[in-house]
Amino acid sequence: MLVSYASHRGLVRKKNEDYLYTDDQKGIFIVADGMGGHRAGNIASYGAVSNIVEQVNNDYSTIIKSGVNNILKCMEKWIKQANTYVYNLANSNEDYSGMGTTLTMALNIDDKILLAHVGDSRGYIIREKDIIQLTKDHSLVQELLNNGTISPMEAENHPQKNLITRALGTESDIEVDLTEHDFNHQDVLLLCTDGLTNMLSKEDIIYIYQNTDSLDKFVEQLINQSNKNGGYDNITVIAVTSNGCVVKSEVKA
Image 1 (cartoon, helix red, strand yellow):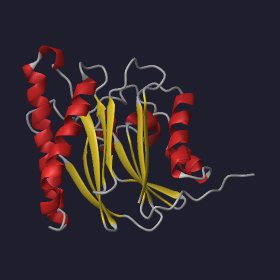
Image 2 (cartoon, one colour):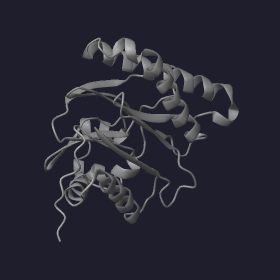
Image 3 (cartoon, helix red, strand yellow):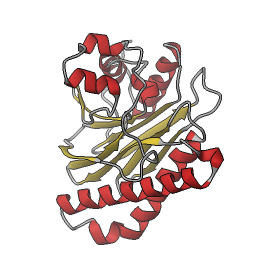
């Protein structure tokens, strides 16, 4: 397994409220985006991820061989407990009132990716020349798309694109999306916050993938191009290959 990651403040925000975590030994990867415009978004993202990591370290050896369904249930439990932690923290300190965070967590088990997801950070699989979105945004725009009110083209530049409908820490309980996906030889798992996906299309991501010769350069160029396109938000990226290979190079001489 080969892992590369980066987080950047972007060109507009005064601080970075994203947080990421990687553990290639356990195959656990997390991105979180503290809610912009709310107090202490960085406290929410850091607190949620740290709480989950503590639970993972306590439970991992017990659950890792228990089967996919049980592991997914445990991932749900971890995120629900992290939600309670952030929610209680937000309600115990006036300075933290209203804070929350998105969270997308991936666990690699053999040839599978198990995903637990809340909010509008995303998970993708890059497979040869294709990119497959594994998560569905919990956002107003996604709801408008689902009910046919707007088209995918209208969604790209919708003025309420950043309004999310589900986040950790904003309610006492949270619904978590849980999914299982194949992770094939030479696939690349990509986790990212919306600071990337609001600046780059899927076509942009694939183009950069096909024109970089290593995983580190792929991540670096994703960050750089997001900033060139405006850098309006914090940008966080984790990229993971299934077998330790570098990204296939198609760089022109």
